[in-house]
Length: 80
Length: 258
Image: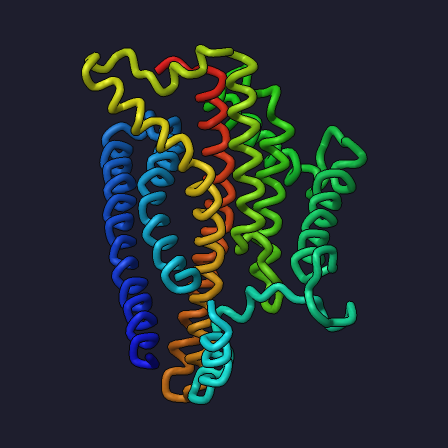
């Protein structure tokens, strides 16, 4: 019985670690948003100022999916 | 977490790192208030630091610009800069109609940014690192925006989910996706702020744990300094993102045509 309990705990920890790979996807997404914003802003600097808010909204939306992987990790660590 | 696991985590702190990086987020009654167990109405460290945030806001926004001088003092000009920044943001994103809700949005921003910055003081407590705190703010935004949407537009608010520019066959599928993404909003809205605050502070604590090892102590102290600077940036950006998303949701409620 002791072994069974440890296996479940190990599975939860391994799963929490694997869930964190999802954050890499969010990192790629955020980098893509900011990189494209910069490449556009350097071509047309006069239009850049008005689009900063849009960039932050884009960052927030792509970051949300990384947050869900963090949430899964938290659930595995503390709730399962 | 089960009690046995908690027990295990408490006893396993033998080698090297003798402060647990997550210890700073424990809600407890400060020793100068008597200590003891946390009950429903106890004054905990969360209450204390939220109260300090409110005092700081009153000092900055009410006592600072009290004289209403034509040539502003330092405190008054800081208050004016913050106010006009939020005013412009609400006007740009939610339109002229959104300005009616400026007091609420401004309160959210100033409370989050003050709590975040107070949380960066070494030894302090970050109230916004708790999902319970951010979830209340995100849920109230969610409920307020839904109510405003239905009051202002009636049943036409549901157009938000029915995208009339899409091909007819796709519309039910898109409606399902839109509805799911609408109800996921308070979750991502609250966990973004809490997660960023918690992760940033835990990283600083982890590097502080490395500082006891003589060989890597200089690198660790440098890393803490660099991460602290980054955190200063992150706390302001996260407050900004929370506020800007509130404006976006408000804009959806005021102008629901897709």
